[in-house]
Length: 237
Image (tube, rainbow, N blue to C red; front, side, top):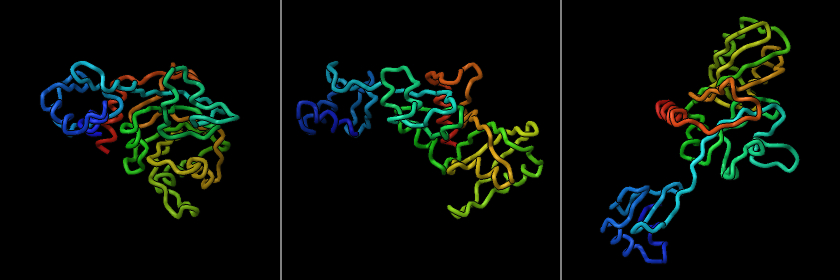
């Protein structure tokens, strides 16, 4: 929203008077005097007129959570426990998920109330890498590496998956890096090579990695460098 429009709504003063107050240097945004009528403000910014609050900025939140298997990637559900239910924060209801995980998949979930930050992270065009640890029913053949790199044709969507990086760590254990997120994609890819996913765990999204000391069900606020690092990675994608 433009600053003059926000100010004009205060006491119904009108945009003409609002612009005069802005030009006179009587309006501050986050403590800084702003003289441009078209200065963009959002709900997270503090706006004052002669040191009187016009808008108190909402609290900005960026969180990571270690989702346990069996918990829904949702903000609410009448039956099942959700990731929001695991967060003990007074502003948790303002959060939305930055991507989801299947109910039986564990690992890193990001949550925020900052749509400007989350939207590019979820946009398929930015191809943000997501890394998963995969345990399978049967041994994974070495030929799977090339098969995942070449991509698989999904008949339902009539598309070929983007090249994926498969690193075989053991007979039935691999690390997989995807740059997209199709419906049940990993399970479907392993099904194509005649195997079955028994356990799936997301380790990272872009530059943000789930720390080993964050227990299942645990969460914490992201550090500034994590927030800015994710923003830098998506802007260069």
